[in-house]
Image (cartoon, rainbow, N blue to C red; front, side, top):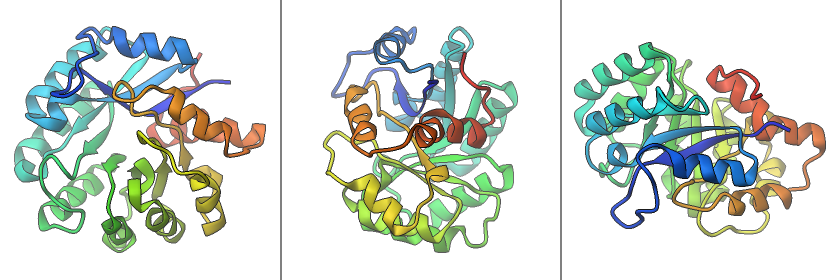
Amino acid sequence: MPVIDVHGHWGTWPYHRDAQASGATNLRLMDRYGIDVQIVSAAEAVTYDAVAGNAALARVLAAQPRLYGYAVVNPNRIEDSAADLRRHLAAGRFVGAKIHTHYPGRAIGSPQMREAFALLDDLAVPLLLHTWDPDVALLPGLLADLPRLRVVVGHAGGDAWREAAHAAAECDRLYLEHCRTATDAGRIPYAREAGVPVERLLFGTDSTLVDPSVSLGVIRDADFTRAELDRVLWRNAAELFGLPRPG
């Protein structure tokens, strides 16, 4: 069965340097665990300089057809990020945007984040949003007037996974992706019981920060049927990001 990983990273981190500039670390882990395609953001873009990090990633994507990109948007520098995002989307190897909340220091409900959401709604580009706090519950209200914005709730809320589940059940443009360093049992069943359909569950790993085996174990323990696995492991992602079936 094909596998698309919607939450990957490329490049080195200040606290974790086991990555290679060519993307070889990504591909090695993908091959080890049977991941066909991975959508990645640049570590430099997330933690320090969005424009420079996105440019570095663009060069890697041009040589690695199994990797696609998220252009990181810095809500503190929205004009620079808007021009940068448009440029990378036009090139065809970037298929979405990524916003981290902690590194730029902007909460989900901040005016800067609202401005970034409006930009992404205007461009109709999917967003991978880092979430970890109860303010994930604000998302349905924030998306109410942004009909073209679809948000992948990265880490499915992290510690606030219950709040994220109910938010996704309330808003049909929120997708849950459950990767994290430590897993809590029953997160996916809880989301499904809350009313999140299988069509809005995605597979992500947080690789190369986290070994993909963690997220694969979460999927294994969720008791999906084979048809549901087909949805979660690749089909939902292919439809959301406009990707071909891997292989």
